[in-house]
Length: 231
Image (cartoon, rainbow, N blue to C red; front, top):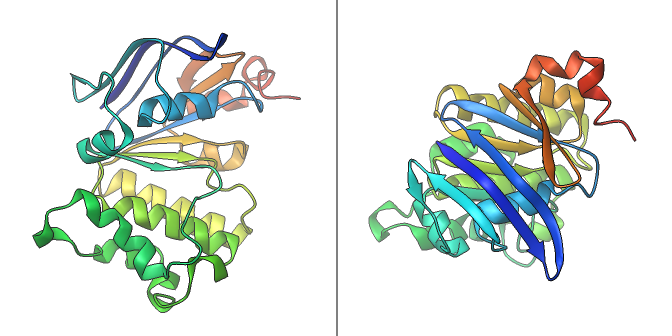
């Protein structure tokens, strides 16, 4: 389980997150929603070690992560699929997937079969360069690369952004599998309400750097909750 307690975060003199607390349980999808610019990505960067928090605690399976850098958090079981995917455009699909090997002992440096079971298109395009893939295929590649590391926590920042509906369904099915069969704790930042409603077990909503609502995903149907998401 991932547990965030009383997190504050600054960019220089500007405070972005204020006393943020949340948890993500194994075998569940925790959806984080909110308008643009309220601090969702900043929270994910703090969780994954890409930006230091100013105060508060981030714990994985009751172990404090402290100032651990991104590679150490990845080695401890946190995989990050950033907004924009950040695949390597000049590397092939296979080489992109193999970048996850850096965390693994030599004997375990093999692309898991489940990557190709979840995203069959990747197996067909192993020799294609990442930059030649469509946006949806790149998103599948980014998720597949994260799974190569064998994570216990999967952090996804807006995986449906700019993706065609057919691939959104594929990604949704993959998330369901990773939750229900693989037992991952999944943190999902999402703007697409139907996607969140379909997948989420727990819902957090942020506004101006704070958590303003926490409850079951069914709360998305309540007017007093939806008001925090309207522009």
